[in-house]
Image 1 (tube, rainbow, N blue to C red):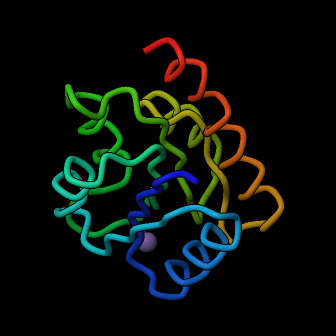
Image 2 (image 1 turned 135 degrees about the vertical axis):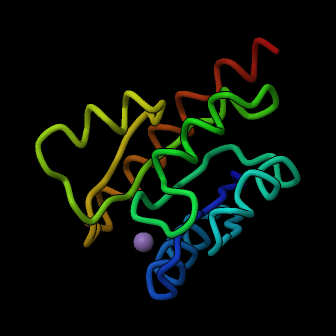
Image 3 (image 1 turned 90 degrees about the vertical axis):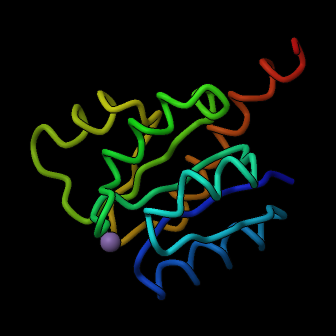
Length: 129
Ligand code: MN
C-alpha cells in the first residue's frame, strides 16, 4: 500500500484516480486547490504525487518545481497528468522534475502501470535508508 497525493481540479478525474488507486490497494488523498498542495504533501508525506498540469492558481509545472525545491519532498516521485500533450510538453514536464506523465483521457492500464513502476523504483532507496 502506498500513500498517493492527487492534485486535480476536476471532480470526475479525482473520483476516477481515487477509485483506481484504492482498487489497487493504495491510500489516495486528493487536493483540488493547488495552493494547498504543498502543505498537504508535507502533512501526508506521500510515496507518490500525481498532479494535473492544467490547474488554476498554481500550475502543475509550478507545483512540480515547488516540490523539487522542498527539502522534505524533493525525492518524492511525481507523475503528471495532462490534457494537452503537444510537442515540447514532455520536455517541460520532465524538466520541471516529474518522472513520468500520462495524457488525459487516461488509459487505465497505462495509468496503473506508471504508478506501479514509479512506486517500484522508489523501494530500493527506502531499503537503503
Ligand atoms: Mn485541470
